[in-house]
Amino acid sequence: METVITECEISDVLVSTAGRDQGELFYCVGVDQRFVFLANGKDRTVDKPKRKSRRHIRKVLRSETRVAEKLRTGGKVLNSELRRDLASIARSMQSNDLGG
Image (cartoon, rainbow, N blue to C red; front, side, top):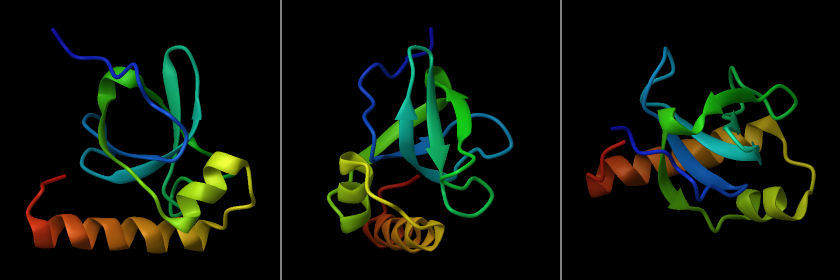
């Protein structure tokens, strides 16, 4: 039985566990009953987020960066900010060998 993420909030950093985007990091930019809306600033922008089932994602961490704060408060977030922040998180995960 697959685990379904029930506790997902805007600004959480998530990793895709299924599909062609498997293994990629995303910011959660919206939530629904069954789906979360993901953006990474590259192929999935803030304006056109990816709709993904909750069972196909895994929560990596609750980010406390400036970008995450903007997402939580509803501020304007640029795609370049998302890309830069996710790249920094990916580098720190690799250096700490946390996986993802």
